[in-house]
Image 1 (tube, rainbow, N blue to C red):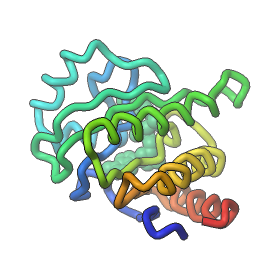
Image 2: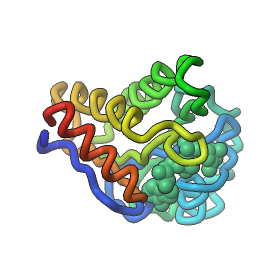
Image 3: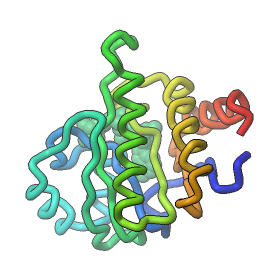
Length: 171
Ligand code: APR
């Protein structure tokens, strides 16, 4: 395993990293899953800031402060809804990771944690999603900007998928 990249069974809201990434929807006004957990942990100021952002397109990302979270900032990205793989889902998911890393670099984020974007309500197959997430992370890790890239996995299924994908990619 590349030493910068960690696969952890954990609640992303507990992590003391520069940035955590939220798997949001295009409204950026909150929801269930990890989005709900992040808003609950950050407090109402997060929603107030999100209201000023005018939403976010699928595959893109926007940044806010972290408020009551241990993380300094939250990068909100919108994953694709899985429709069987024929509607550009893989490119859109890849763009989520690319946009989030780009925004992180621009904001001097050195440590970043991701959930399994699109692998909950949006139905993306976890192994396919993990291969995309880890291959983008591997490219970022070799660029030298980041000290720590964490994948915070909340379910046994996603944890296994990420471990299997890491083995497949020889990480
Ligand atoms: N920490 C880390 N991961 C979590 C947490 C948490 N606290 N809570 C849930 N997860 C996991 C889920 O188990 C799933 O594996 O995050 C992964 C992503 O699931 P969702 O939160 O459902 O996100 P997604 O599939 O991208 O769907 C986005 O859900 O909540 C809404 O507003 C959100 O409409 C958007 C949609």
